Image (cartoon, rainbow, N blue to C red):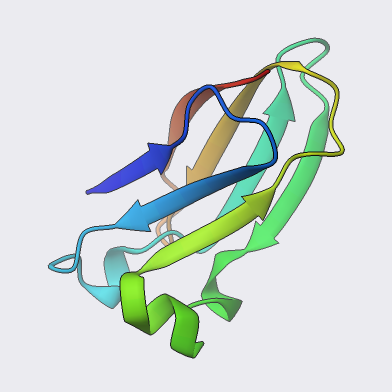
Length: 92
């Protein structure tokens, strides 16, 4: 399980993963798409974050969104097996 917050967001979005979630179940890539036109605006190689001390402390990935136009976006968390989950995100 994971939690995306704050939503609505201003400058940063955090994705916090459950401590019990096994490493192999964590997403491999996180993509951020604009609702308008479906354009991809961020790609985060999530696996690069998993070995950092900051991630190991609170199991959180921080995504900067302060430079993006305000509106509705979708976070797509892509798993190792190719499946994905989408989260609707509002930037205000």
